[in-house]
Length: 252
Picture 1 (cartoon, rainbow, N blue to C red):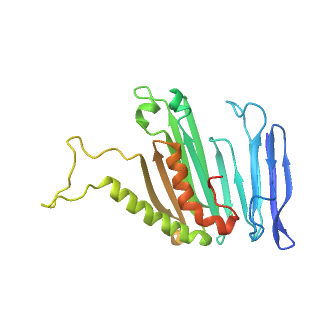
Picture 2 (picture 1 turned 120 degrees about the horizontal axis):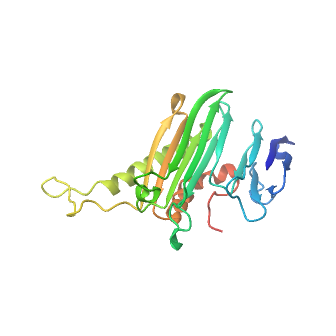
Picture 3 (picture 1 turned 135 degrees about the vertical axis):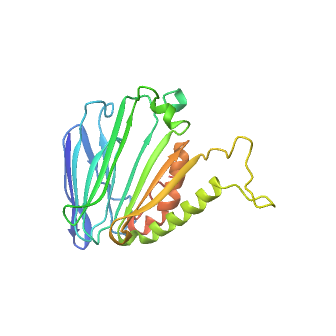
């Protein structure tokens, strides 16, 4: 399966000037997702049939022209993505994985998972190289190592238009994790802990910067429920509505 999408400026607006895909892959480019006052193209990639199974491979190339804005959504969790950005470009990547149908007892029940996200700046200069690998071990399973956490996620924010989002998410994560990992002090100045230590947080998040002049921020998340990750994304990406014409992960 393969597909190509090209977004360019046409009459001062971002437009999908080329949209090609081979069955069972299909791109949908609706015209009424974003507000008419914003300049953004929304692209939904879908697959016909029963979904993606082991052995299937999808290759997509998406080109977003100068001064254009595009949103691409995907169905699959396993990806080996390569992004090439200019120094003044802005990019958001949300890549996450669940344990499966864990409410039915399916928890990390697979042999191998690998996902790669690489970002190159101004051609071939490595900016961010990341690979996630989950593999069943001889002594411990993936489920044992993940304990009760059912979701892992990564959010990457790059570029000048996202500076306010980067600053806010770093501050919020710092406050949130400080509150969850550090117990209040007792009158004598020591931390109060239960007999068995602090309770395990339902969501753990961390932030780190990367690139020249801290161009990018990566947020890594582990959570017990998918809803808590949705809520995290809804809250921290809500301010992007002014750029995209709609709020990512908003409730409909």
